[in-house]
Length: 164
Length: 193
Image 1 (cartoon, chains in turn blue, purple):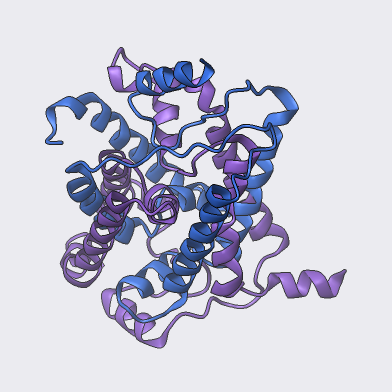
Image 2 (tube, chains in turn green, red):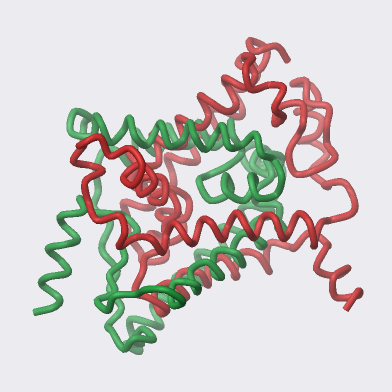
């Protein structure tokens, strides 16, 4: 019963791509764990120089292995983790079954993906590093973030008119 | 303790950082049944601040507050790393990249970002228009159109063996290669480098 409710709600959100599928409601201090996880993530981002415009230039010029090593080893650890969770039926700390929505193919992954790639090489940042660059003191990246929000909003405004 | 901070202050190698980033995937799944994806935070901010009756932004964003806390944390983490664990020496990038970028007119190779580009004095000139306004817009529009970014597709999606995410990642890379190796030089000349 609960599962059905959740799937309906998931559809109402027009497929949030990074959804919260926990059934139990979370509030207050329990939310702190996401802040802490994000903080650790931000430290790794800066310390491994993933947020550096130079590192992104190196990557797209094929002049360093660093970023390929970061993304490649992250994916390998991710694949192993998800396989372990699925095969051993590991539950969440709330005792729920882990649910991961499938990614559906759409043309946006080609057109939008290509556009994002162009922007990634200009700004030297995907969305995560934008936040880390600002925190690290490059406050002018706030302008980039606002422009990224504008881009997201314009996409939302015209989403149903774009090929998909 | 000092030795520990010194050790932490070195740039971290890929084989430390990559697995730590990969572990974010099971951490989010097991802590709260959540799929990793950072660009969704931009959508939630739009939904919270300027939904304007648009269906794409009419959903219960409060349920996704975790994602906003996560990116707030990323900002705090950036602050901590830059202020308490900062690398005392200049960034070391490949000599070939440094030569290429010098040829493009970049001269500041001291820290994570070149101040020739990423400084407030460029906000209202053509450089800022290219690097902040156009670049940022492409990142925001492109990731939402693609349904995810490096975290949602390249890491979370491929980790879950989703072929659409592999397609998206291939096109992220193609866009990046084209911009870096073909378009960036004329664009940078055009904006005054």
